[in-house]
Amino acid sequence: MTAESKTGTRAVVAKRVDSGEADTTEISELTQAAGYRVVETVAQTRTEDPAYGFGEGKVTAIAGRVAAADAAVLVVDNELGPYQTFNIGNKLPDGVRVVDRFRLILEIFGQRAQTRKAQLQVELAELRYELPRAEAKASLASRDERPGFMGLGEYDESRERDIKSRISRIREELERIEQTDQQRRQQRRESGFDLVALAGYTNAGKSTLLRRLAADVDVDENKQLHPDLDSTAESEDRLFTTLGTTTRRAELGPREVLVTDTVGFISDLPHWLVESFKSTLDSVYLADLVLLVVDASETIPEMREKLVTCHDTLYERNEAPIVTVLNKCDRVDERELQRKREALSALAPNPVVVSARTGERVDTLCERIHADLPDFERERLVLPMTEDTMSVVSWIHDNADVESVEYGEQVTVEFAARPAVVARSRSKATELVAELSA
Image (cartoon, rainbow, N blue to C red; front, side, top):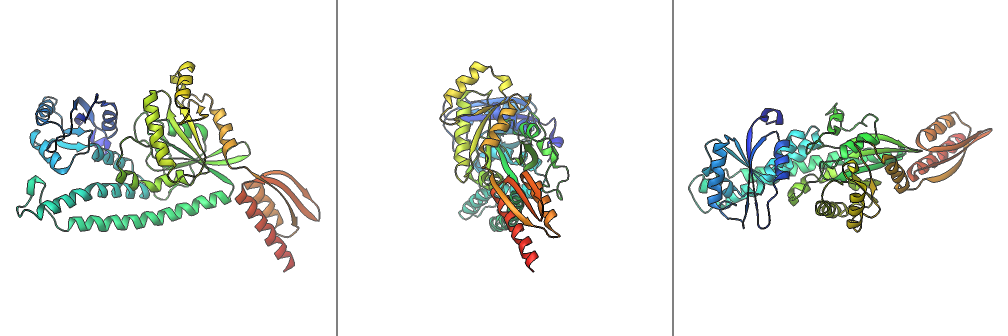
C-alpha cells in the first residue's frame, strides 16, 4: 500500500518505555511518513508484559481510544512478538491493524524503493523480519496439533524453508549489483573523480546539502530502472525522503567531485535491518571522504546519541576521513552553537557549521572538502608525437588539473591529479612509446 493510498487513514500511536518518560515525537513522524494521520498518542512506563508488551489494562484503554478516534491502525513504537501482536489485536475493534515499529519502517522503505537494488534490500529486510516469526510458528506447531496454534494463523511447513531460500537468492543478486557498483566507482576514480558520501540521520538535511553542493544533473545511478532518480534528492521535511543513493557532480576548485546521498540512519534499528541495507552503506565505506551531517538544532543529548550511533556504524568498515557537518545553523544562535561544539568536541572535533537551506558557510565546507580529500600528485610527462598523442593530451585535460603544455618534436605536459589518474596517464604514455616503436 502506497503512502498516497493511505492518506487520511487514522492511526493511534502507542509507546512503552521501561523507565522515564516516553517520547512519541519520532514514532509520530514515522507514522506520518508512512502516509497515516496520527489522531491519538498513548504512552506507558513499565516493564514489558510477555503477553501484551503493555499492561493488559493499558491495552484495554488503548482499544477504547482507538474506537473513540475511529482509527484503522494502531502503531506501536516497540518490537512486538507474534503472540503479543495477536493478543493486542484481539482487544481492538474489528478490522484495526497492529503495526509495530519495524513493520512501520519496512512500510516506509517499501514506498520509497524505486531502484532494483532498493527493492531487493526492502524485500530482504521484510524476509529477515518474517523469518523468526515463521520459526516461532514452526516451533509452536510442532508441540500442538491444532491448526493456528495460539492464534498465530495456519502453519505452512514450507514457509520457513521458502523464506530462507528467497533470502539466499536476494543476497546473490545484491552481490552481483554491488560488483557492478564497485566497477562504476573504480571507473569514476580512474576518470579523476573524488568520491564524497553524505551520511547521518534522516531529516538531518543531507538531501538539501547535496543540492546545495552539486546543482549538476545526476550521474547514471541505475537510470535504466529509474529515469527520474532526481526525485530521491528532493528537500522535504519528512523522514526517509531518500532511500536509494543519489549521486551528483560538484566542482570544487580544480577537483571534480561526485557527492552521494545515502539512506538516513534512524534510532533503535535492529541488526537484521541494518544488515539488509549494508550494500547501500558501501557508498559510504568506499568513499574518499565522508560528510557526517548532524542537525544542530537538536538538543545536545540527542546529537550525542546520534553521533555515537553513526560512529559505531561508520568506523566498523570505513577508512576515509570523516568531517562532521553541523547543519541548520540558521535555527541556532552563535552562542548556542559554541556551547554545542564544546560539549561534543570529543565526538565531533573541528566540525564545519553550515545552513544547507540558506547556503550560509557552505563555501567554508567546500574548502574543507578540498583540504581533506586525498592529495593530488604532481606529474610531468614527455610524450612522443604520434597520431594518438593529442587524444592523450585531451584526456589529461579532462581528468587532471593541467598547469602547462609545451609542443615541439615532443609534447610536455605538467599537471596534478589523483594518484589513479597519474598512473593511468603514465600507462597511456607508455602505450604511445610502444606505438612509435612498433
